[in-house]
Length: 236
Image (cartoon, rainbow, N blue to C red; front, side, top):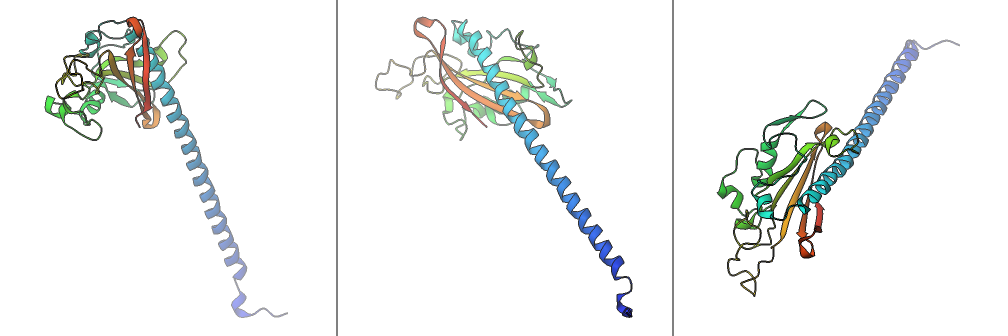
């Protein structure tokens, strides 16, 4: 059988096309696999970060339960025993990246890393709609999660717990727990709804830029013996 002149090299072209297609499919499979691995890794890290923040929150709550004067907690003069130095400066994470404790506190107080003025912290925003009663977040506990207690697991996460006045108060003084209410506040001008109640904000920082925040509200238990948790939520 005689080959047509136009058939010369057709087999080679088909082979090259097949190889190109197989390479494209292989590349797509590799990219999909890598993407799925990153998604799984990030999901696991995010879940671990929530647990890390919650563990720090629990430790801070235990320490706060042993402090009767919560004004000292709000102004920073009473702190947890879980600290790794002063609540300022840079900390290096397990993956070599760094965080600044100052910037973390500033972001919590006025949504920017630079220092906050009183006006910045009193500003009414979507995140902080209470104006003069906006919490003034103050560091209470901070350090690597693996140093949280004797039974801590080896963890790459760094945690910081801040405390602030309960924004339900209406004394216009976020550094005092349950000051005299500023009218109009409640039907009874002698009652401050946020007395003996403070807010906590726990943040966990980890590898691949993982960052989770949990906020909670706790109150003195009956007879000022211990505390009870009133609310718990993942902020983001």
